[in-house]
Length: 259
Length: 315
Image (tube, rainbow over all chains, first blue to last red; front, side, top):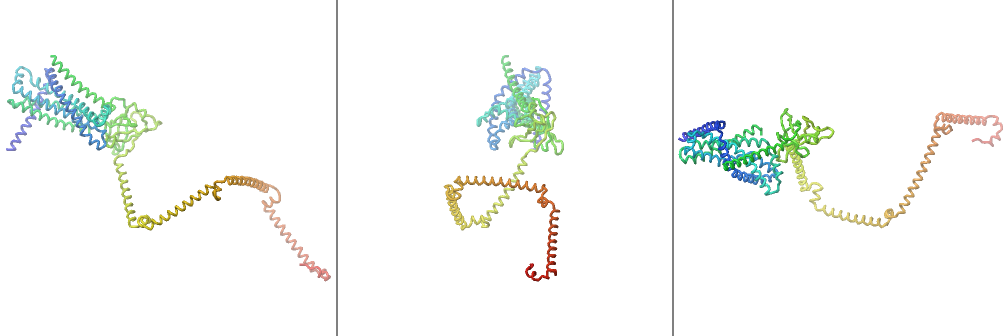
């Protein structure tokens, strides 16, 4: 009985994966097909980018401060306080900034997309669109996926900058340090192989946040309960996808740059 | 419509800010790694790259002047390191400058240090090869530390041995430390030394006051005057002696070069032989004369007159 249940779970999992791949292919095709929904894209960009910015900014600022405050005593014990800006910059730009931004977007955007599309599905708005000649994959899904793909990296850049600002302020809580010295030391530790892979992976984060949210919403079952489940599943799946992509990105970048 | 435009503006502002941050970061990083400056490429062969990687800094006189642009193994004992150096500092780096691998602090990343060369060798050119130096590594320090620890261990063992000997009463130091009779002896010696010091003090005081010969010698200027006079006399005597020697030398020269009998005696051995033979002849003559006189005395003519014989007695 237990084996059967496991087998069913595995079937469901691979079915979801297969469905997501097919959905991604269909959405990808819409990127290159007319009409290009510019207004919808701007609207989604506004909601995804501008509305998420305060959350991302506050979180990044706090994370920058916390990372500095947590790391400082350890580094001071080793007599390596001067390495603090470099350590924070590498940690934040390589990992914390992109991942925190992506997780926040997964929590806010992916669930929102899942719930919105789920509600549209339940209320048969998507069917109505199709009947009226508007392609829901093009109008609803592709615009959201493009918006998340483009704006999550932008939010990650801003998060990196604000996180570094938080780090600078927390260092100045203990000892005065000029902005020039802080950023000079921070960039001394950085290399292009810290920035480029981190930037590339944020595009993947954004793409999968939008894609998974849309997929979960697009494949919502019947009833209002299914909408909540879709929103929840979108957050969980997106977060899991973020960590998986992060793991693959780290391995690939280490392989490419020979770190 | 206005609302949509407002949203678009805000979105545009967000995207522009994000892209600006990204571009600034890339630019600043590029400046840090000398990507936007004119560069010159030089190489160096190292025995051990010590973890040096592409992008590590190059320092000359404590200033970042470039980055490592390549690290490649050439042979089983050689690593080729390619350096991109800012063209502006080229004039300060000489062809005989030496390259060494360093580190930013104990926990910092590796860097390449360029040591100054001599001005006579000229400034570096494109694709020049700089000589490398072997850097002092942590392993070297550990090796040195190991030797120091070994020496410390030996010293410690020796000290233990010495203290054991002292505790067991072996040796002079042990006697000094362990046996009480030594202390009174030292005390007695020190008392004697105090007495000697007092005597010496008194002596010095007397001398300072001008008492006794030593005091007079130290304090009386008349002695000094006499001594000076004596030295003057010595000086005049010496001068006269020098004249005498000069005269003797002249006499000797005359003796050597002159034609007198003394010169002949001094220099010509034949004259001596002649004199010697003359003396021999004289002796022979005297002997002959004595013999003749003897013959005359014993001759019969003289014996005819015995009265006269008695009167005249020969020795």
